[in-house]
Length: 237
Image 1 (cartoon, rainbow, N blue to C red):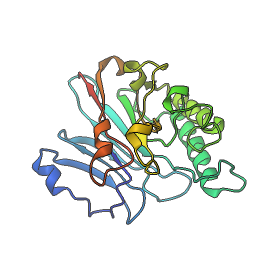
Image 2 (cartoon, one colour):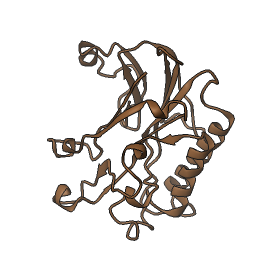
Image 3 (cartoon, one colour):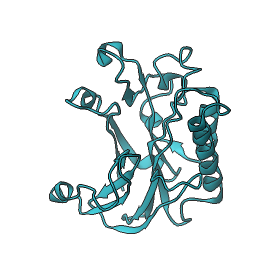
Image 4 (cartoon, one colour):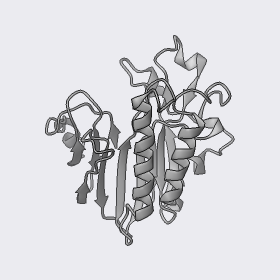
């Protein structure tokens, strides 16, 4: 599952992925901004795209895949970052982020996964909700991504769908866990001022099947790297 692809719909670079065996690709993209995609070796039973905040800004895509047990619906999100000022009265981007979370919560309460499916939510949710999801809880309480209003909003979203944070199944909540390091640090690795902005949630029935979690921290040091690193989870299905 990919976020912030910044690729116009229909122009996703699928050929190299198909050569690696990922023959099934679902995308929602636009030129220059946002964009999400799901690539798979398994065929899709269904595909869906949902609009949030009355915007066609390519921040969600979902697919369902068959397994030997129940089908699994996978939701891939790119939640708005929210700008720099954590005040919705003066920052339209932050207001948009809070509205996006409200709409996610309402949708999850209604049911975003068919009753005969298990479900997964992944993506760049742009919020580090727990104390040890950031390098300094105290220093970041007034910084967008870790403010109380954002973390409370994300907690409501998670609770609305009864989602299980499977990353924290593997790394206890009192241990530091990051998926993002800012470009602003001269030496990101030495400073290690990270945040966990990327998440994997599952329905309770699927959570025990998550057998392994890997954070590919070394990717942050690659040439022209993203400030996010890949997050991998292995499920025994």
